Image: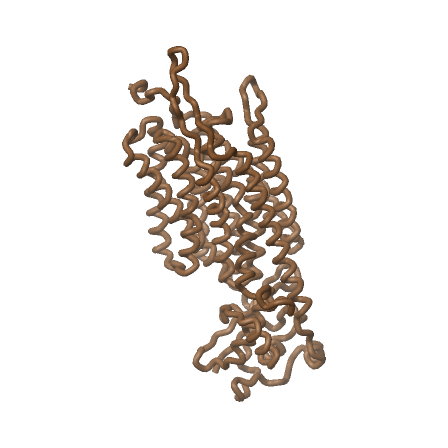
Length: 530
């Protein structure tokens, strides 16, 4: 036998129905036909998610014993989930309706969330030697990313003051178009400088960096809540897509290479000369523009699939409509030929509290993780890596970003649910963060300078640090997904709050108090200090 718990009134793509009507629908023969045709393989424990009214969540859950669970009902449940997430599609082609295609489009859509900021970080080893801000440029980028939180703040205020009125899909479309335009302008004008207070400043680059940061930050509180309309396995695909936002630019950055420093003597003085990369930064930023366009098109395709799915959903039968008016359904549910009374259909009306100790703990870990990965360490990465050479800086940035999608891939198959285990992972990542921060503080004369082991330790530490915290963030996002739409909204807020605190903490240390020292090219900086 099995026990089914539904709400008194459920909103479905086929109209509103009572719990008993819902139970009857899932046992219809046509449900089995649809499920078999599209071969959906989804979690039965979350068979239905939909919204009713102004963003009010309505959920249906099933508690079953698989050995007594009829195959017909299994497949019927699968149909229902498929119809919600748009997997059933149309009759035009089976491959277009498969879950695999949806996974691909979700990944490409998610790729656009942070590919702009990731690309800016990856291109730092190239532009840091061209733009007038020099080694301080990472701190400027970090604080501009922090100011990009204006977007999430506006979204959060709108959710609070006008719940259910914000069209998240329209917001996503707008910020995607803005990102494509900004990246195109960046490709053309990135190296332009202006004079401000008798100093050269890369104003255009910084302004466009802010625009792209605004888009990325806003995506955290719009993309994630949008993903709540999909089953849990798609949230992992979403984070893998975010990992691709680092992987794809990494591969391009590896092909681009990095400028090499040569010290040449001219008129009895030693002058630094940087050799050119395999292709210029302009081409890299055009690549960014193309990837953002692909992400926007993928989101449009997801919207189209959902629309087609709803249009092709089987209509309600007349008896169901009549029963809806009466407020109840009198037909029993047959479980493998055995009638099941409506007494076994229980009404689930009590909402669960989100602000539990565990959820607060998870949000705190998420905020600390993002403070380190998006604020503290990126602000001083040039100081921790460049003393060992431009190649060390390049490899540290690129390989650390490759560790991101790899960690997300691991999280797709292994989710650590232990709070203690997540805490230990956070502490382990903190050890490597402390090491990298210490190297930055000791710049321009860190330990093992001139020794290949020194550069290797920097690169390895960056990889492990990024990998551990990337895995941690994906797992926490997966766990919070189970708590509902509001949880994913707070997940995005925690990510941005942590990033904001980290960046604002480091900016005055780097640019005002000059705690971290920049080395001079072609000069023995350590002997000079002594």
